Image 1 (cartoon, one colour):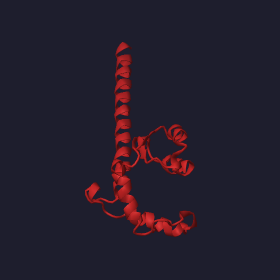
Image 2 (cartoon, helix red, strand yellow; image 1 turned 90 degrees about the horizontal axis):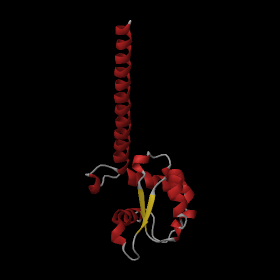
Image 3 (cartoon, one colour; image 1 turned 135 degrees about the vertical axis):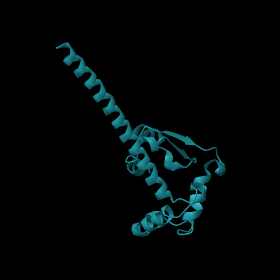
Image 4 (cartoon, one colour; image 1 turned 135 degrees about the horizontal axis):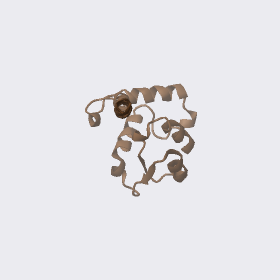
Length: 142
């Protein structure tokens, strides 16, 4: 579980990888390694407190529309699982003001890129201004 999660999350910008919250299942036994691999904090819900991870519980309910409880996911067809993931990630959600999870993620990625680009442009403008001032002072000294 840890290896797959690390592989999936390592491509997200650090700005979108801050924390993970889990139940107390065995699948997160290597959470310390995950924290180190991704530079994130992992938190655990209190036992028997599903309301502490309501979004996860809601997603589990949506997944059950496609995959009945008790199904062995190791035996499931990967192509079908990918279709289920795409269907769920392109379904509008009230919690996202009726955006889709995929659309919301793409919007966040674009915003992060634009902020980084504007920061670089600002730094470049300061650099040019400083160089221009330095060059003007050199000319005046001649």
